[in-house]
Length: 195
Image (tube, rainbow, N blue to C red; front, side, top):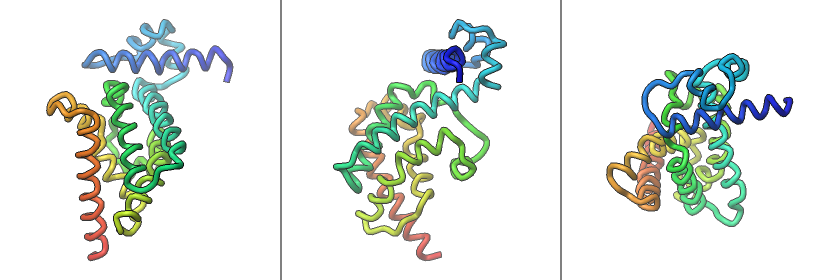
């Protein structure tokens, strides 16, 4: 990719992140292009829609989570899952405003299994922590269904709600969500074994 193409894409992603983090309501491609100081026509050459720019933004945040997770070689099991989840809570509090708008009509597992690029990078970050946490808890592996449960609890909207509305600290929110996730994993595993 040419350097000017890369620069334009980065500017559009950054601009969309800033706009969605700072205001509510509809934001058009024209708004994003203007904020990025790029023509609307150029913006459309790089991304077919604002939703595609936001997916790219979410992918970038997911890369940060994946990179952090892969570096945690000294941690394992629930401790690793807690550290990676705490990093996610940090990322959400920094970038969450823009991530609230990446919504789809498809469910999480359908998008993950179809290879939605902004979710697969997050799944890469969570595969080992979730697998090892299940092992440590004495639970059978449940694969991407564990990621489904994690995604439900660690949704950016819910994290921001706990921090902004309930006034939990990031550590408190992480601890409570991890406790809820452990219960959800145990319940899910038990029901699968009965089926």
